[in-house]
Length: 445
Image (cartoon, rainbow, N blue to C red):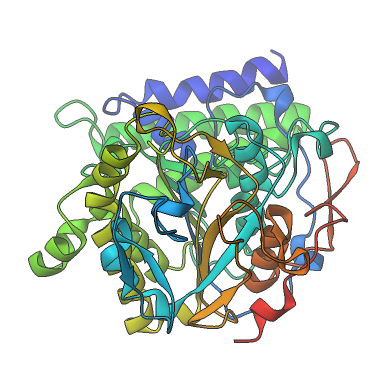
């Protein structure tokens, strides 16, 4: 019996437990295990990550990915006569933002704005890769298995994470591409994806009436027997990896921390404040995950590719997202969680400042606005600005490339952006390109 056949059989054993729909996948993915991954693709290494870690109070990072290209002139960097939306005063002195962020405007005093984010990539796939890794496609062509920066954050924080069997990366909303991918990092740092916020861990419960605890225990013992026999004969390190993940998945099933995913534990008043919507529940879930000190939480809100019906689509998205984002920021700041939680909101690019036919705006990577807060980041500050027509950064020395923002996020979260990881094949891989520059002024809060 080959190692590959055994490992695939172990993955298949998860399905044989007879759990509810999708249970095998849920068990496998509890610590990031991808049941579709072939054994030969699994890294056999797990280097000491602590040489990439720097002193930091940050326990968690919340990343809100406005996927599709959020129009900056309609939202966080409005211009008169260039948007059909009204503007509102924010809680940052002298700063106005677009009406779609009306509720969030009151909470901006807790964050910083980067109004001169830019890149060269106007393609969704390339730009999302950059946003989620800090690397342009051309810069990482030699690394097809590059990890998302969220998985890298979780990897760096594994020493201090209090839940060794609890997911260290949780993604909600749109998925695919680079989002939540562990790349060459150990597979347990892949994301645990929540597809249904109403039943986030429903598939981890044994099938009622069919699988008793006693029967499940017998199957565990049988698997242990197989593992022991094969491990004694082959000494395959990968067997231990799969075995550890399976044990951790079972620990997760019986964990008291599962209550983290139970939104019914929140008061009815608080649930209404966030909104009884997908966005509201996702943001509330993010808050609870940050309270549990999960290292990385990513919420992806799609629908921003507004080549037509720009105004109507933005209004529809923000009707749910605005109160939810505002409530999340308010709770992070009010509870003190913002001292140990990084908050980051960005899109992969902006949209053309001049609206076109069919009320549409096209891709525009020359400039857009991002939000960042938490830990060492100043509160109520604005970094950079766009020019009068919101077409490019107003000053070249205050133009912040996405890779610069990523490097700054790493540093704020307690990872050394100048550090190097080693791939499964032994190749050195810097956390960010050497051309990335930390925005030092954003770390002086």
